[in-house]
Amino acid sequence: MNRPDLVTPALSRGLPAFREEGGSRVEPGTTDALAVRDQFPAIAGWHYLDSAVSAQKPQAVIDAITRAYAQDYASVHRGVYQRSADMTLAYEAARARAANLIGGAADEVIFTRGATEAINLVAQVLRKEDRSRVLLSALEHHSNIVPWQLAGYDIDVVPLTADGRIDLDAAERMISDQHRVVAFAHVSNVLGSILDGNRAAEIAHSKGALLLLDGCQSAPRLAVDVAAIGADFYAYSGHKLYGPTGIGVLWGRKDLLESMPPWAGGGAMIDRVTFERTTFMPPPQRFEAGTPHIVGGIGLAAAIDWVEAIGVKRLHAHEAALVAECRERLRGLGFVRLFGPEESAGIVSFEVDGVHPHDVGTILDDAGVAIRAGHHCAQPLMDLLGVPATCRASFAAHSDSSDIDALVDGLSQVKRIFG
Image 1 (cartoon, rainbow, N blue to C red):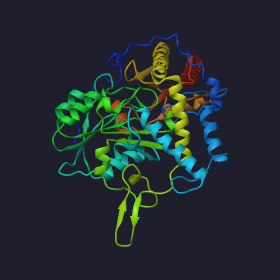
Image 2 (image 1 turned 120 degrees about the vertical axis):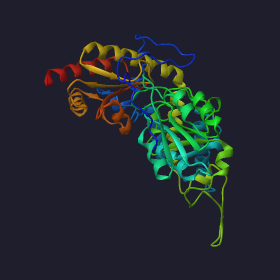
Image 3 (image 1 turned 90 degrees about the vertical axis):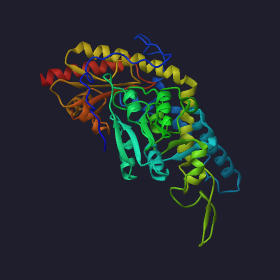
Image 4 (image 1 turned 135 degrees about the vertical axis):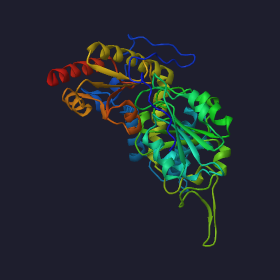
């Protein structure tokens, strides 16, 4: 693995803000504007600040899943009876919804078990030809590191800027004609920093490489258009988008998918089978062996409908306001160290002086506040930050200022206990 100097001295200090092109800072004061908290039955009386790991589900999604199992259920792509035909139409409509959310076409969307499987699929199936290297960054989730290792790629690691973003100037210097893929997180799951996807695409394509974006944290909270970005692959998970677990999306350019061989064999992905030879369906069916997660697709479509009824841009503004308020409140405590950019996509990572994040998380849990405490499946980034773990508060549509109040009160209790 080629690792340039990844350490930037200012990475975890008070840092300049990052602004999306065309964006503007959202000030505190509008943090309860969405007023959807009562639509989430599982968080009554609870301050859930762990949406980056998995989002809670609104009642509309729960109802859609219940209805699919209790009233409408039948297998898809197989039966000639009406209910099977209806469920097939609903399942394929869900594929179209999953594609439309990110500006893609339905025949470019493969349903997977999640973004992890989606990235593994690309890493294992994409032909390397005479290129055997992949360009990653220092902030990647393990699910965008390990698949490339298992597939036998040589990995080069792009450092971060002082404010915790992927250093695209460095990426431009590092890219070569040996790189088959550039694979970056669109939004960091630890720092919340947002990638300039358009520039990343330009850098990858300048040397004939492909761009894969890990969209787990961006799909739920940013307006994404894969065609406008110039991405070649984009992966996201349903459960981080207010949908069910076990369903994910891999979007790929149609010409790329058509050039890729199947990944797994079995029912649904075949055209004709004999003992001598098998032919396969075109994409996306070619990559979907076996009975799919039918109700997962239905639930994901319901989640996308729910998100789009609010508006993704409105969700992002709401979470940006919460980030600004949270960072200001935590900085005012005097014993909290903040990581990452001042403006991020719904995520605030921090540590409490002299207290392990696991202890912080336990005390906050006693106070009815749920955060993530750990390495967040980003151990190389923890090494870069010089910490074993961080605390992470991540926001969602249902979050409001009362969650920040509870977090601050809980951290004050941490300080009282540990001195």
